View (spheres, rainbow, N blue to C red):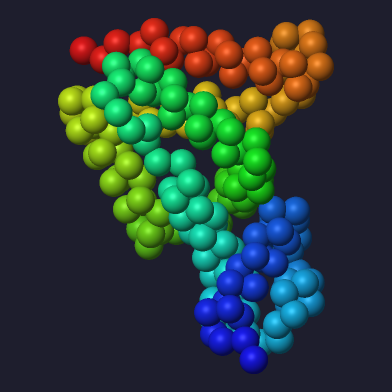
Length: 192
């Protein structure tokens, strides 16, 4: 018999697939329950609502990113450090496009955002603080750098069709060109 943690994990995995495909509005708890093999009532028992489950799925997806894509180790110069991190984030998104889809759905459905109760802000504040320490800069300077690096890593996956149009190439080759430009540009950065 499955325990509560296995049941919750099955729901989160089925919810991740469902929400990535259909967003909050289009997702159906019946499909999540069927795909997880768990009674639909467990969704409400664990998460309170479909929106509560959406938040739990997003947090779980970001926890995966945290565990898989840490900052690079070693004493690298700032540009090389940031370039290596950009490449790691880009590779993660190439293998796990569902996280970007979840974040896009969240942005398209602004009523789903609850900033003051969003536990993800703690994760990102810790990430900004550790980046500031690593680069020996102020936290307020590190925040836009982190946002920019993540954006450069993710954008080619979010709008490959735009890369193809701008670079007049296939989406895959245009994505590679955009990534290479970002890697080279970030590698040449100096901080202070």
